Length: 311
Image 1 (cartoon, rainbow, N blue to C red):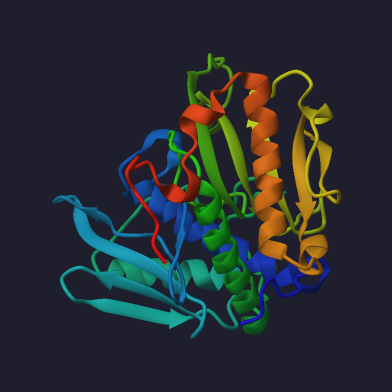
Image 2 (cartoon, rainbow, N blue to C red):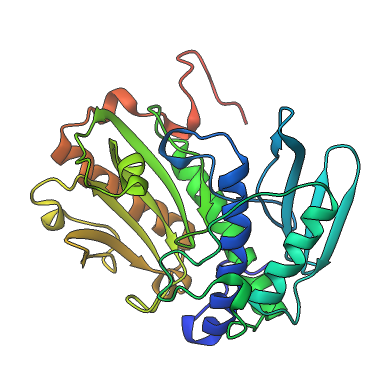
């Protein structure tokens, strides 16, 4: 399988916008049917060997225990109930409205009736999912390529995450923003304003250095690896980044460290370059927040002081 295949945003904008709304519908079901976790860790999707999964949800006597998976090899949505029942339908040829209607009909047939706020989140329009016939392009080849890139990036971020012994999020795919992220927590609580929206308050109630990957959007129409520190310490954007192609860019009143995907693809060692980038951005944030990097270092995911790696 090709490492980091090309994925220019212009090539799959329509397919991305359609599938992003499919993902938000399923993601909102996950949000409504799962137990709340700190920093919204219960919300994101996780990759599987065939696509994406919500992981099990429901159960405990309130509704059936069930799981929803996007099979992006066969291009079907699969719903499994833990009493052995299962239902699925094709993703191909569906508008958002068609997907929404078929999904909730299928869930109801399995005795599952989640209640969601059925409009898109932060996608530039508020057309209810049930009425959205404009977004109707599901491209199997492009969506499969998106999943293959996603899976490779998840493994890369997991390798990066292994080097930190402090509190770390899972590597997960946020369906509302369509990015992949792993977050390192410094352990310091942040005072947040009650006027701040509840999504942000929970996400940034602790000081973080977060890293990830996005596929591009209207504001930044190119895929890229990124990192940021929140709250942002003074002088962060003056800190050095590696490799030379990395840069700091303004983003909603703060700064993102960015390494563009297309630059990575042509490098001699793309995996090494991304790991170098993520580490340089982490070091920048850690230095300026006074984090004890040596105390929290966990090279190769090992904290055992007597461990000896053998060939």
